Image (cartoon, rainbow, N blue to C red; front, side, top):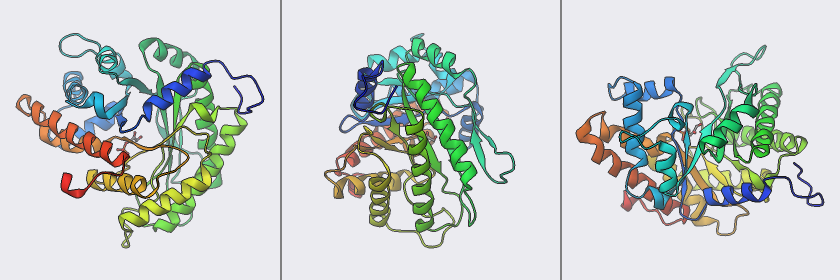
Length: 347
Ligand code: 13P
């Protein structure tokens, strides 16, 4: 695999480009439904529901069979359990998604662990045996993957050690994915928790992207065959001075124009704890104001797509229809935000 345009194109290059382009097709975005068993348990606690294999299946089946899924959702990031799971009628989830024209993806990292000698910081693990796991996931139908790095912010964090260790892992993961014909979604998440200002988030995001793309270059990852899944540039959730929507959009676009190569086929933002409405409004403002960006600006939301659906469902059979509707509504609004055509009145 090479990044040089003068070298022969690497194996799978065309496939990777096609998959990446399909994932950021106009008006479509990605649903992140890859919560680990412990994360989904926490989400279910909010509706007083026990997390079992069946309740997790019912919930995900509700999302995957919502009306409008084919129209607004290009791909779904699955968890290991879900990619092997079947809908209640026995259809494998992977088949169900593929039939709807939705590309199955898979979370392949094994979680963020404490980074030794760096108090308050994390490094994401999961490289051991990854080549074999990717080959298996490809056979199971996955055509893209996700790896999330956690970058905590304080007055002194992140350390250079944290940024380098996480970027190195992301780049090695990305190279392995491309070798297997799987598009890597590269996710360096600058965490919203904390009282830091939006300017501090800008500075940290810029540093993280700079280190990341350096490592991506060193590991000969093809920029044309990956997607970037970043945080927006936004004040910490406990910061008293929250920026308005236009400022978040402007600083985010400015930061990414300065730090993300134009060869990258798309930027798919995470929601990171923003409310569903704000996450849509921010995406919309970025697209409404900037009509000639080098890459499509899209979404790969977890909570911001799922929260209203989870509440409407409430773990009840009678709530399934309302849950599907709530999910379809959010997906449609984020689709409109991709064109800069969302308004609060559509809520
Ligand atoms: P949120 O949109 O809830 O941040 O989730 C996206 C995701 O996949 C985090 O890794």
